[in-house]
Image (cartoon, rainbow, N blue to C red):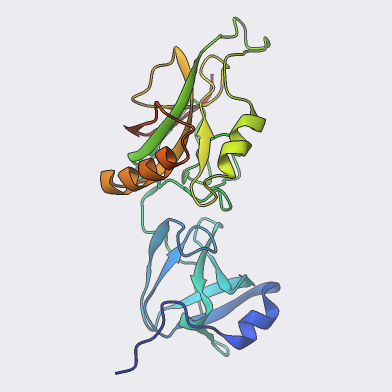
Length: 251
């Protein structure tokens, strides 16, 4: 029996690699496929396209078709699951979550190469990003889904007294990037409590800033990452912590 590979290769798409169309084109789904937040098989899933469904495609990125969502954003599906339609009518893909649920529990984007983004807020390099609505409401709180992280080390917070003051007592970007190189497929992130940042993390002590690496959606996944961390011999106090990312959008 012949079994399709998970991501079969499309020679034509491979030659083009990355191309953006002058205007969106109609494509039909020839086999059911998940569509994702980034052109990467490990990125969070938006939903599933059904066989026979017609969608708008605005380009191809590294072999992934860039699909137009109803809110004007983009999602991605592997190229061999869609084919062009001549003269067909298509509509933007409806996102599989409501704006209300997305604002409360957005999926985390754990791959450091493909952070989540939105027009209203750009996550800083040291923050763990998660899916947000395209339009954010001022003075609203947005939360990610729960996940597991490996806390690597911590340092006492030195808060800034005023918004314009500089804070200290956190891990520098140089420190973070040095550790990120050790775990290329798992986001290494750092808190900056006391710095008047919009982003913070639940189930942590704000008196201490931490450096952590994304562990996974489940505890067994996190335990595997913890084992890798401990094999480095550099983070003796590392431990697993279940948490959420929180964006406090406003003063």
